Length: 453
Image (tube, rainbow, N blue to C red; front, side, top):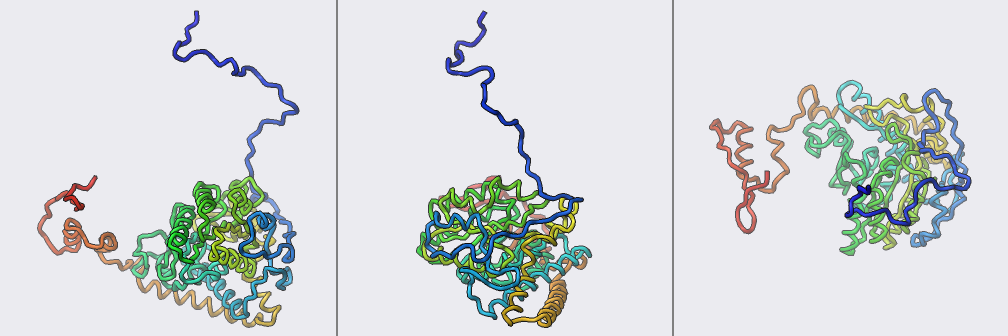
C-alpha cells in the first residue's frame, strides 16, 4: 500500500540515491586551525623574508590590480640595522621622528602605570597596547584635524596624537567626574570630540560600517575629509568587516580600513579568523587596493597610511591596510595568556619592538642617543605617575567618583520633559511631596501620544 501523500508527490526522477563513486577521494575531516605554539612549546618564528626594497611605491591613484603584490608581501622601510631603505621612505624630519618616539613611549608608560593601578584595585579594568604603539601613533599622525577617526580599544596612542590629555584618558578609565563621557562608558572606551575621534564601542567591529557611512557622507557633500578606522584580526571574521568592505567597494568613499593583525584575539589565534594567507588580500575580491605593512616599523606604517589617506583625499576611494604586529601583553587585565600562549613567544616575534626600532633608527642617523632615551624614559615615567595622581583628585572608587546625584538626567534631552523634571527634583530632595505617577507623554506634530512602553 502506498501511504505517501498525494499533495507531496513522488521524488523527482533526477534525484540521485545511494553512494556516488569518487576518484581518489581525500579523507573527510573538519579542519580546525590551531596556534603554531602552545604552553610548553619552544617558539621560534622565521624572520621576515620581505625587504624594504621589495615593493615599489606606486601613484596613489594606481589600480587595485597593480597592488596585488602589496597585499601579500610586506611593506617595510627599516632594516635590521635601523637604516631606512626603499621607495616607501616617508621623508619625515628628525623632529617628526622624535615626536613619534616620544608619543609611543608616553603610551607605553601610560599602559605600565594603568596596569599597576589596576592590580592595586584602583582601576576595574584595562587593556594594554604594548608592542602595537606604532600602529596607533604613526597611523593617526598621517591625518588632518578635520578627518574623523573610529578607533579600536587598544589605541591610546591615537588619542594622544589627536590631543586628548592623558589625565582625561585616565579619568575615563576610573569613571570619575573628570571623565569626559560622564562615567557612562566602560574603561578604555574613550572618545574625543575635540579631536574628531568617535567613541569606541564594546561590540567589536561596529565601527567599520559606521566609518564607511561617515566617509560616504563626506563624499556626498563634496568634502575632502578622510575617515580612518581600525579593528583587530579576530574582528575581521565578523560580518561587520564584510559589510564595510562591500559598501566601500560599491560607493568608493574616502576611507582607510585597518586590520591590526596582532596574532591573538583573546585566546584565539589569528588562524581562526581567516583561511587566507593575509587579511589585506581580501581587498582584491572587493576591487579595492590592499596594503600589508610591517606594523612595528614606524616609518612603514606612516608611509602606507599617508599613501592611503592621499588616495582617499584625491577621490580614489577606500584602501584596506593590514598592520602586522604582535600583542605583547595579555588581552586585558582579566586575561592570562600563559594559559594559551607559549612562554617567551613575544620576545621572539620577528618584528621586534616598535619603540626600540625607531630609537635605533634615530641613533643611526645621528639624531638620538642612549642617554637622550634614558632621560626621556625617566621623564615620561614621572609624567604618568603624576598624571594618575592628578586624575585621582577628581574622584576614586574608594572615596567616591564625584558625580552629581542628578547626573543620570544629563545629556538625554535638549529640553527635559516634565515627568523627568519631577523625577530629578525628587532625586535631589527638592520636594517631599509624593509625586503622582503620570504616564510619559511625547508630543508629536499632530498632538500628544502616549509613549510606547
